[in-house]
Length: 289
Image (cartoon, rainbow, N blue to C red; front, side):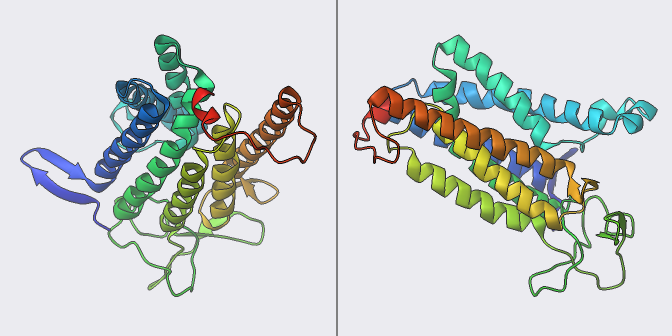
């Protein structure tokens, strides 16, 4: 863990902030490549990323406030001045709303835009989780004896009985701290899995697919990643041993799966294909889509 990278006078450069910035830059580059391939203005990517980043940070903070409203009501200034309290799902909702506004401004289809964004979101998440790992921001998992389990003694949130937790027989989080305890490095798991999601989506982008299909696949794959990793993370279980994040992940997978089925049936109906018949249309159609 390297929570603080260095100081420049009064300025402190945090590893999490640096990786977040790097995630946005890489996402911008990925979207820019797609803009060039599809014949759009490359500057469209910067507008998407900047607007999506600002709206995403706002949405993330709002989600965090609503998710823990009593704490914030007890100390309202923490809503503005706290450096923590960012939740990905809130950021995703805010970012999507921001991207929608940008697509309307440029008069480029929202579904096409989201298809370009899907791989970028996945790689951005992967890089962001590296920041979580370096900072030790409390995203680690439950105690583990696996060979790659690790301790976070320099974690920015502290490494103590209040932050090292385990599940009891009733799926309640209780202290799991003891000298020498090690835990699942959940951010590492997510980095690897989200890079896998990026690789899958990136490989699919040049093949023919109905508009919006890449984003629907992102919802399915990213939802599956979060659902699986949550089993070893230290988030409260709220419904039959599942966390709130897992319930949202299930909704993502169902929503993306239903959308994939509906768009496939619609595309087959419009092309006159029989169900199960292989689509032989050229990949160049994906650009016109």
